[in-house]
Length: 58
Image (cartoon, rainbow, N blue to C red; front, side, top):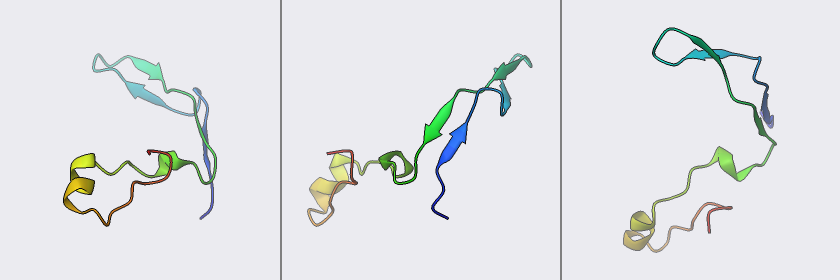
């Protein structure tokens, strides 16, 4: 959809296990951020040398 993610600490709440509402953390990921992809484990790259690490994790 070509949209980034932007969330302020007031956009949501989660519970810390005690039932107490806790403000969520601030998050800002622009479109194209490498954080939308996870790194490929080095052990997988060792087994499959044709794999290339995802951008931003070299």
